[in-house]
Image 1 (cartoon, rainbow, N blue to C red):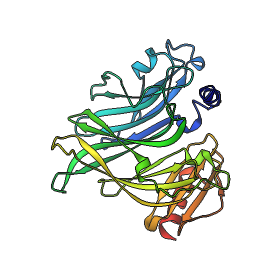
Image 2: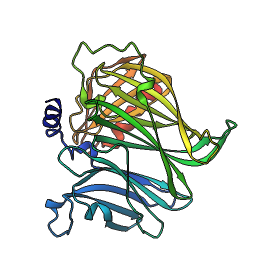
Image 3: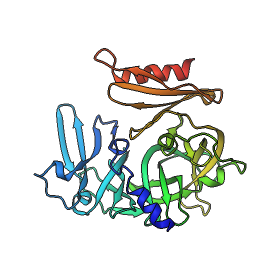
Image 4: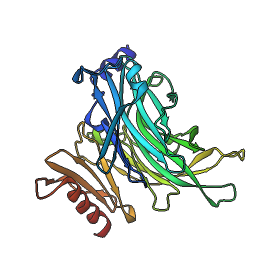
Length: 335
């Protein structure tokens, strides 16, 4: 009976919600890559076995080219929530996404594209048959060697929200993908539950799931670690964890994550809905969460462990979303 109830609940989840539509990055060579999902029923001119596929757009100066990600065109199901990373030394582009292949469960996927535009074989990772959403990505370019010294090396940090069918529980998850010689050399996961306090109590007030289930990643200025901010749904709390890539214990080149919990605080009430949650992290654990809703930017600010009330900035021709975000960043960093 519990499994039937779980399936009934998941059927109402917005699989292709606005929070999962695309990603973009700018390379040192001046190429802007962006990736987004397309619904096949909105593009009858495209031959695709999938109901939702991914397209990659490359912009350099006046030149704009688009291409479909091959495996997402040929593999049935829905391909969504794409995030991308780039290795400047090899010219390799790394794409991670979620493939929804059946009624309920889905799978984490990745594929790489070389400097000549050739896509490699797509591969899956993570447990089968669970349900993921809100995939996020950040990159660091330094790691600690066996002597504790910083060395150059690309690491891709991934975080997402997952429903585990084995125990019928939802939680944030994290994985580190190590890039060696332009290839994904391995993917290591970190058990976030081991960093949660043992004395967490169930929330006495309603929990804003639209915020709790969207983990955020903040790379450090030194590019040697990321701060993962993730929610715990039962207690309605948020937790920050500093994660550093380190050399593997066996002395090999594969890097593994080492984590240290920094702080915890209650989750705010922002009602992100299906919008993508974004964050700004400043000094002294000051932080802002915000969502862009087209004509306004709504936000909350954390200071001294307390969240502000939700506020909104109206956007128009005189005030863009970027300008409003810059103003919010100054508020977090300067006041």
